[in-house]
Length: 153
Image 1 (tube, rainbow, N blue to C red):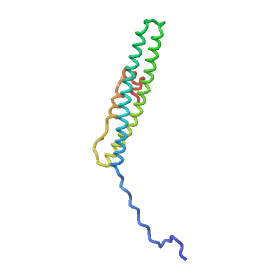
Image 2 (cartoon, helix red, strand yellow):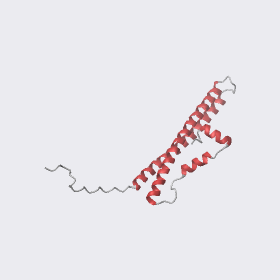
Image 3 (cartoon, one colour):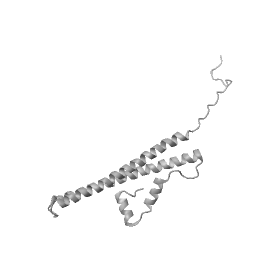
Image 4 (spheres, rainbow, N blue to C red):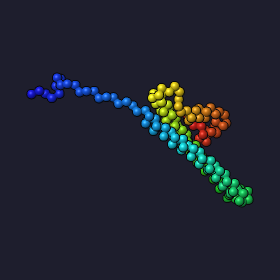
């Protein structure tokens, strides 16, 4: 009786190494990139609508009563503006989080494109370039922007 798997048995043929499919991977990342950019566009539009809504509500509340500190309209208007600023900061921080993820997707797509097509330069640079410009804002506008959630890294 011979033991199974003896050293005299013929070797099994090597399995072929599958080639990496770049196009489907890049297409999926491009779709994610497009969806994230669309999400940012929608959030910016919502942000602008909220600014307008809060301004109109506050203005109407202030002018609806006498402009005295005893009138509740002044306090409600201030509260509406405060809540709008707080909401606006949250939206800005969410946009920045999406932007951080967009930069990761850009890096992945650029690396895949360089590997697949020997692309000499980056294909996608919009969010990375925007973040570089945001970080260059100095002085009072930069400090206010960071406080408001516009310029976070």
